[in-house]
Length: 371
Image (cartoon, rainbow, N blue to C red; front, side, top):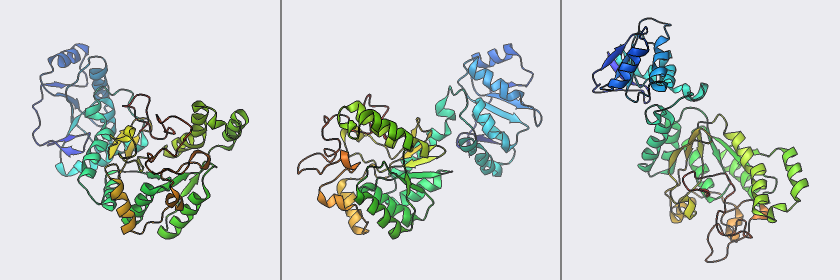
């Protein structure tokens, strides 16, 4: 026998001794006694294949009795149960053959792709495997200096579709170079708002020819754009911050959200040097809003690191950068930056310096601000 950690798919080297064993026929009094004792793991026995009463007992322990300790599945268990055990509150499972750990891990991972999250999750640090994976990936990427190796590590650790939203800026072009060099399969797209600079679209074409990677153009819903322009006017986004946010919402945020549905990871070009609001950007984190792992492989890079990489690899760049455009968005909303100005001073320059974000990268830990 061996004990498997359901959240990580790894074997537990020194299992704690079980304090209570519950049979599938256990009544409410037995559950209450097991939960109140809390002296060690509570084991729930599965006497035969197809007997799902143990699943119900685990839910009752968590929901009704507030048990926060380890719940262990024992007895007749098969790998296909893994995802259901996790969802109902189990932490560990006894398996007969330690060599089957990889099979159990593969079964448990399907919960990420085929099933919605459980309706209850009182112990997120125990059972939210995706959040654990994101934290582990963040630590792992910090130990890998080469960008191409970071991309390979992302692909190695994330199962399912990995998507990369590129704005064709310097950071994103560096990432595209690394994606091409790594040879991993990543879905690359850019948001075609209908108001991009011609140079941006030229950079798309040049990059596709250079790397042999298709960059999908994702457009907003035509009816929503027509309604927006009819209401606010062609340049209504300059009349108020609310109007500008509405424009970004329709042309950028909604199309992005649509593209991220079903993805398991989202790669972006965010760097900590971009702004004060982005100073704490991790290399990888769990994105609750989109239910995926958000990866920023250049988060810890300096501008000098970035420009040196681009020069060393002869990365194709948007010609607007040579004309003073640093952070490039839609043509009506972006101007060249003057010497000494902040890199994002050219975005929505008619607004105040605070909160110059379009809503694509929101920081839930910085109230009212984006990151």
